[in-house]
Amino acid sequence: MVVLDPRNARYGGHTVSTRRVVIASDHAGFELKQALVAQLRELGCDPVDLGTDGSQSVDYPDFADKLAAAMAQGQADTGVLVCGTGIGISIGANRHSHIRAGLAHDVTSARLMREHNDANVLALGARLIGLATACDCLKVFLETSFEGGRHQRRVDKLSPPPATPRPA
Image (cartoon, rainbow, N blue to C red; front, side):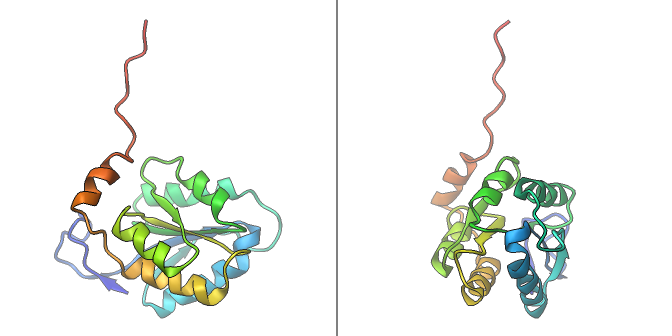
């Protein structure tokens, strides 16, 4: 997928580039993640697979942290996370102030998390949705832009509040 994002300084608003997407999962999401990596390539994206690399039990917060670190380092502006339900891994990701992860169960939720919430990470539950639905969610998530406008005020409120001085 070729994108031009004028909000992204790396593209300077003028250079067209292949979209890089970081993706990670725990053991329960491994098979679906592998299929989504292939889907990302079919969509013309450059997937960066952060693991896990098999079905052996791992802890989903570790992979949410890996993805958040990769995004903080500028490896990508967009991410995908997969665990059994999508719930735990999205909670883990949302602990990081630069992440707005949304859990999708259908294309409507994938579209609205981008349009209204400016989500930068798509979370999916491998035990809850099928491959076709997951691929549809991914495609819609990547193709949908943030509407801004009235939604910007709300998204701004999702950012961490300013630090308050502690009483002495």
